[in-house]
Image 1 (cartoon, rainbow, N blue to C red):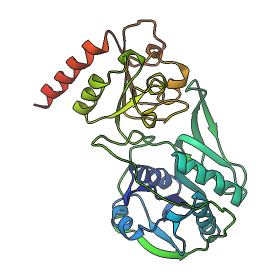
Image 2 (image 1 turned 45 degrees about the vertical axis):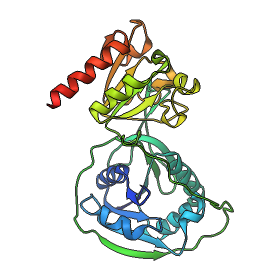
Image 3 (image 1 turned 180 degrees about the horizontal axis):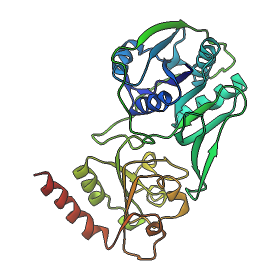
Length: 314
């Protein structure tokens, strides 16, 4: 049976939903070994129960939080040498893609980023050029290193108590970057944008007033996103930007309110399972990719939609 390594993705001592999704993809290929590169291993291990994981492996001997992503790449390279896996799967976050790139160089392996699907033969599916083209690709040299976009698969449950071992690694010191200070991101009550199953985004049509967008998002328990036009105007934080130069999301439901649908924005949300567009302009490009469209003023549509959702909840 082949072995697949997945890098445990965590923030503030909490395992992300992406880890369970990586494990589900890994199970298509073989036995899943979850690799922990964190000083929070003791807190993370119990959270890995009931996932599709066969073994867990904690890398010890390095203070990962005080070093750059190079330290994690070095540890993963050592695990690859030990396990000889069929593939390494990593969450397709900014940090995950940096680790994947460094790891590929260290192992002289091919790398695929932003995959939205992966089959048992390690053929990855990517959505490129703003979602206009679907590409099927595979790594032909070395150990395949693949980053997978969040919400690309429904996570499944597995072994309640996977076997565990510690693995001592050394940091080769070739990457001189060192973290001098670390502060966790300030989080609100809404879901993380890249992990949310529902995203409501606002654009230029909000005229800077995101209140109805936020209210509708809260009625659905959704994350809030924004177009580049809205973030560049200072109407919403850049950390919430969805698009080619922002974050890429693939939720079950994406609601675009007052967003024209420029190719830059569509590149970041076009793989969403269901897309609903609300725009006053019936010729807006966003309607070309929408499953459902409402031609109307978001300031009239969203409050009614919020009231309807709240009433439905009882």
